[in-house]
Image 1 (cartoon, rainbow, N blue to C red):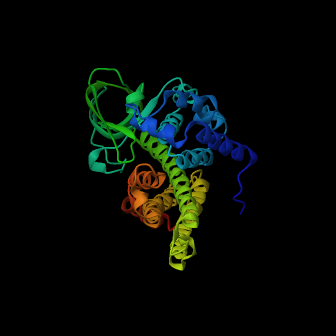
Image 2 (cartoon, rainbow, N blue to C red):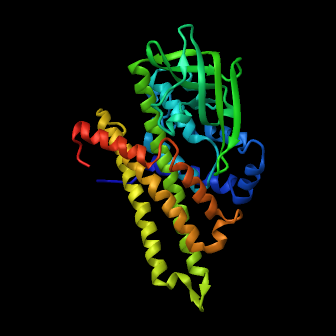
Image 3 (cartoon, one colour):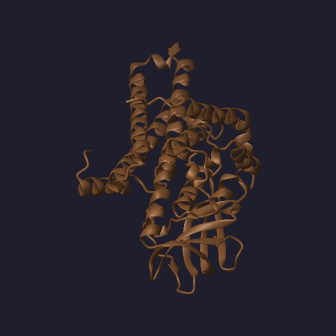
Length: 366
């Protein structure tokens, strides 16, 4: 099998890498983390100008002819720089809107509007299928959505809710009465919000099986992109640790010469490459017509990320010693982001259950 990226995909990767090097150096990132917004609005305009916001959509859906691989490549390079822009949320939103054939996709791809998915609830703990929000027959919504990234900049929200007709997808204007945001930051310094909806008017996008399929479609693409981000962070942490071991001296020699530390680096490399392999498998499976095969491959990748990510980040801190937990060094920030990713869109237990159910349902070879 050929795992090499095409020339167009390599050019896309290079453009993201150049952006991170040019616009997102460590001092610039720190200034953004200290700012009230946590992001620079000019960066999102750059994303749109460079075509990244539509790189993962087919031309039929209003994008530039790419798919999950392009989104994962972008997320991987953004992960290396720990870029705080809510790109993963954008992936989920565009894929859901494309699945229900909404005209709103064009504005998202051009960066003219910000539509943010609000699909998770507190009792779900990352499981997007746990939906307690309710939609009335008159078309209003009531409920609470949690951990909504990019909520402060949203023009509209995509919500899931239960109605008498079944699970539905709804579009809500962020400025209408009945919408209350409770913003806060996570341990990795991302800005998120819990959102309360009370008798909030909404536009129904889809209901029943169509809505559930669109939600799964969007979340699957979001998880693959999230795994790509995790891979970028793990890779950056691995090689930053390698470089540190080559220059840090103890007992008159570089500590990278100690066999015990070489073994720990080898373990970090193995975990990183396992995630890379499972991500490739998920990218290949996402276009599968078999929903069980798709779910199995994507959940296998996410379960691996949820265990290997914190392991690699934790080992990087251990091998750096006390300096690894300081705010000024990137290693502690790598670990914090990997810690959050491990639980975002479901933890290892949830995805192991999802993987097992998919394998049992279709007897898919593991």
